[in-house]
Image (tube, rainbow, N blue to C red):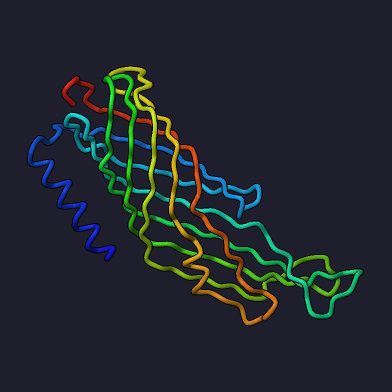
Length: 226
């Protein structure tokens, strides 16, 4: 199903480019930050690079690459032999990271220096998870690694963004600010992992959430038609 969607998007991009291809691409780089209650006060983020391929009227499709991830809050593991003086048995740490190709049939409405944008983005790539079960030593002075798990799965998901583009410095440089909602789900990788110790079970945390994005656009040719 994911492969079919990717083929459909590629066909759309190529079809429109035959109608009127932009002579020179506009490049971008940016960062997005997200916060979710499942992460308590922690956050996760991603970096983006890519290109706005062309613009024809209100259609300005982009293709790019995103790399991001985050860390879940550390969770104390309590042993079966619970005692008041030292109830801790170990510590569980989990983190995830993803790298994905982005296809974005972006829509832009407004004037050249003040656009409102809407981006329904399709992401396809890989998700990696890492987990470590750290055990307290007998003297409780340090924590040693007892078990570790690593897993990698294929990933596809949607995200949506509404923003403002056109904070122009010159004809070559401008910025964009946006509000994002991502449907990336890190739980898919936790489901493939587990520890032998019964009391060290994986945490689950939904990562579908809202975030803020900042982008820097660069037109290397700097003409009105490019």
